[in-house]
Amino acid sequence: MSKPKQSAIIGKNIAGTLVSALDAGGGVLRLTPNWVPRSFLHPGKRIKLAPEDWYALGTNRGGIDERWFASTTEAMNENRNPDEGLSYVAFEGKRFLLRDAVAEAGARLIGKPMFDKYKRWPVYSKFFDNMGPIPHHMHQRQEDAARTGQEGKPEGYYFPPQLNNVDNNFAYTFMGLEPGTTKDQLRKCLQDWNKGDNGILDLARAYRLKRGTGWLIPPGVLHAPGSLCTYEPQWGSDVFGMYQSLVEGREVPWSLLVKDVPKDKHQDLDYIIGQLDWEKNVDTHFVEHNYVEPIVDRAASGQGYVDKWIVYGRFEGKQLFSAKELTVDPGVKCVLKDPGASGWITVQGRGRLGRLNVQTPAMIRFGEETEDEVFITYQAATAGIEIENTGSEPLVGLRYFGPDVHANMPHVGDHRKA
Image (cartoon, rainbow, N blue to C red):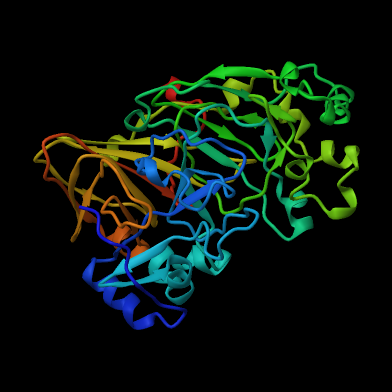
């Protein structure tokens, strides 16, 4: 059952309440739904938000087509609320930011090595749920994002079957550029920005999206996500640049191309094009290098439960994030033991995760609290948590991890060997 939004919000003086919440949950923290609007997008209406709340923040802010999970990263929207994109922990009528909890007890929550290196939970995940395609865009590489005081952003995609009962308008995603494309061709697209459709999709290739599969999107690679609802583990940044001027007849303003570009470079086409990782965009083996399918982790599976890798692989040899899907049959108990913290979202069924109940809601009002999302701390994950399916259908949860957690994570392409 959903509960009314907790009224008390604690600031940074959270130590006592955090300890109580950790003790009560056995190291598992209850998180509240974290809705994010996008002014340039059209809600896909599959992430359980009640229809009357699709525009809960006002039509001027745009429709809500994203829900962020275990996020300590701010959504960089124009005219945003101060806490937009940040996840809250709920405990006994009080709420406090997960970001503040990590700052207060980082070693206990995310592990000492990760906290010492990053001083924060450096990743997040989301449901991205749009009615149609969005503009061909990219997320800056680290060196380019740093020029505006931000961080680069690689992404991972997985298309959960439970959230994709319909395809919506265009279940294909353009990724990268057609091999052989030249920078002069792309320059012409940018020069034609105000002439209508700037034609950038004529230089790209669309891939049909398939439920239960996924992709890796390196930073600096163009992509125009299609209309399947997507689970997206990613680095903790909200940088992007839109390179397409018109989508489904809707204008994309130049300001969204240069949102995260130094002000003195807003008309510098060489700089804007130079942000792209050109070799990865025109890769002749794009599918081979970026497409993933689930792989069963046999060491973490057993009688009546299956744990699968759904987002895995590396970026320039670095393990930055990953995700798994756990399915537990009705009446079955198992022990979940991971080498690192994770953000968990329940996508089917109901049950018990340690001391906390988990349940997938049918509909959520904006501001209501639910029992579908938790943060599994490093302390709890490494000790092991008993999970029980108390319902009549499979209990399915998606969880994502931060950098350098797994010693046995698969490589892209390993699904072909499984």
